[in-house]
Image (cartoon, rainbow, N blue to C red; front, side):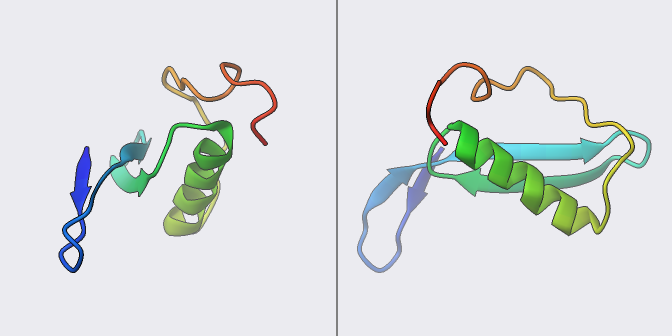
Length: 73
């Protein structure tokens, strides 16, 4: 997803991270500069902070970063 800086006109690509609480459909979305393990973990942490709590079970839906890039943390 391209992100445009209104001041400089620069364009950067961003990756969308999304999390949904299944029963309530409470949704969180955030943009990250890349799909690495570190940013995936950051997305998880930001989602938990946004939801103000931790669900009993976290079910990742086909995450690409964890396990696909060794040594990225």
